[in-house]
Amino acid sequence: MQTLHKSAPNQITRIDAGLYIHIPFCRTKCVYCDFNCYAGQNHLIAPYVTALCRELEIYGERNWRATTLYLGGGTPSLLSAEQVIAIVDTARRALEFSPGEVTLEANPGSVDEEYFRRLLGAGVNRVSIGIQSFRDADLKRLARHHSVSEAVEAFASARDAGVSDISLDLIYGLPEQSLALWRENLDRAMDLAPEHVSLYGLVVEEGTPLARMVARGTVPPPDDDLMADMYELAHEVITAAGLVRYEVSNWALPGHEAQHNLVYWNNRPYIGAGAGAHGYLDGGRYSNEILPARYIRCLEQGQLSEVEREPISPALERAETLILGLRRDAGVSTAGFKARYGDNIAARYGPVIADMEDLDLLVWRGERLHLTERGRLLSNEVFQRLLPE
Image 1 (cartoon, rainbow, N blue to C red):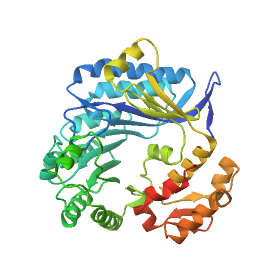
Image 2 (image 1 turned 180 degrees about the vertical axis):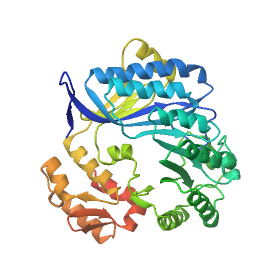
Image 3 (image 1 turned 90 degrees about the horizontal axis):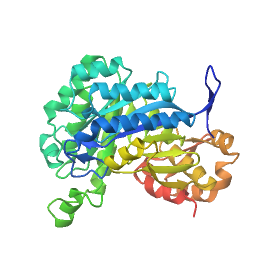
């Protein structure tokens, strides 16, 4: 179901969607990263920003309206303040984006207080800082270009500039990372008092330098049992600091949940703009041309750079709504699911849910279906069972 919005004064009916903007430029590429990002192509940033603004205008011409704005990457903070402001202003003008959550991913070493102050004045009101680890040895091993001191300085710069909604990203399961060292990371993060924390278990993605290191035996693969212990410890430490888990990998102070990410977890439409971005509009998923130069050429010709589209069947949409909803601590409401699809969760998925209740993976709490603590650790298994055959 899509949310419609009447625009004044011409009363065009617009369709609400989140807006994700991909910035594919980095100083260096981390050994674990399989995202669409490129080092050594900063000369393309200026024409890329121009192309992005044209892409947003095209979506505006197709009557979409942005409800949230998230600049991810890559390293969005490689853009100048003027370039970020141009993108935000274009979203406001072309997509009728009114004051709401605007998030910028920032890497330490690429930002300072003046940078944050200028962005805050232009409406960027949330910053996500990719710290990843509070140990310099880990950062060096991951080929991160910043130090721990620069990470702490980036956080302080954002806070001193007046940013009141800061999220930290941390990775667990790193090579040579013990439970005690992970605890030190968590304590350092909580000492900064962020409003939001996102945690990511290390994944060895095919084709990355990390995958080659693991294959050669120079780096051990992640230990699943240790990572499960790390996750449980993280929940304990972060909760004790006053943040509330609202999604499997995310904790926030009340009122600081990531509104853009809730678009994903509620399985609502979102625009993916930029090279390699993925979107979900008009009942299907799509992806854009991955190479920045080719992406720019498409938009210079006034065309979107979409290269692939996957239609989503009603059965798959229902299953994905259930799966994404289960990632949230609030679980999935039977009444809400029925209002959206005219369908009853228990009637459609009853036998599968019953089997997973017996395995202590799912639990009913009133009219809401939730993952158990064990189910969170084995969530991929749960989700696989809910997908249509």
